[in-house]
Length: 403
Ligand code: ASP
Image 1 (cartoon, rainbow, N blue to C red):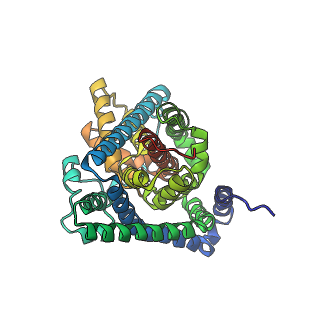
Image 2: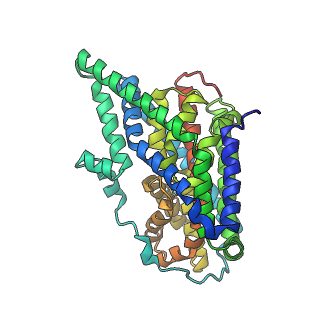
Image 3: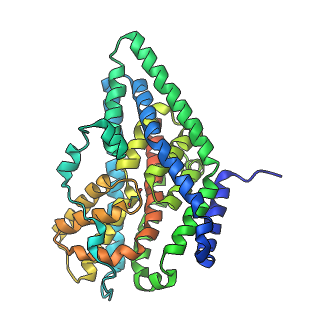
């Protein structure tokens, strides 16, 4: 019998998970451990994977000039795609006006949410860890990435003996981490089944949600669809000169995993694996762009932040001026950069936008109920944009790809 390809297996698992959660929700205790184990395994490898991957990648990049060029390209891609995403969201939310006339009672207390307290400047400062081991133990991705880039970069300036020893060591560690990743990936269908079944069994009935929040959800999902299925493929096609359909096929496994786990960080090992093995991007580029992308490049989140903030304004009957809308766009970009690659991180970050334009924070209560569902769509969009970025940048560096 022909073996079913992994991404089909995951898709089947996803559908079975939805069915199990919907019809056998009371028995979810029998199977949710599968999701738990899968997520734990992924989280287990993230830090050693990022560390070894970035260090071995950055030593490969070599000179400061190359690193600077790659860094600049990466940032330009991240900022432009996120801004395009936000503008798409702004367009749809102004067009469909999901919040206007909506009679939506506050569903939950905002105090549960742990509102973001850091300013953006502080977030930047916090990138420099005071204690790298604390950064590891708290999984502070940006600090870990910062340290790893620095470490990898300065390996190039050590004596030949140290340089060879360290490069060999980190290359070898990275190889092992990838092997472990491949091993974990094989269990993805079980993991996805467990996670999705659990989530579905916990969420309020879809019909109830759809009735009150349908138009809002539709606005977010339509915006995400346009960005993911039109904007990003056009960029991939015309700037990267890469076939977007092939690229999509190459990264289906991480996309489905992102959709099921709602976490770009947890998906990162699978993203690296697919972009390197299926798209053919070198480790030098993927190891630099993907961990960074999983942390700061969140097109889906950026779009969602903008739509959600505008929706809250509409629901409260507050008319935002042009300038205020510009502030929404800018803060949505910053909030998406600041959001961690974990489930519902984007929801909390909306408080930044609400504060910036003077909207009531209680508005978060409005969108809480449907956040988890929208999180799935925006996380998949986030990861899709990271992978497109990796191929576009690889192409611009003259690499020959498989897609
Ligand atoms: N869950 C998203 C991610 O990991 C972040 C968000 O909540 O928007 O990419």
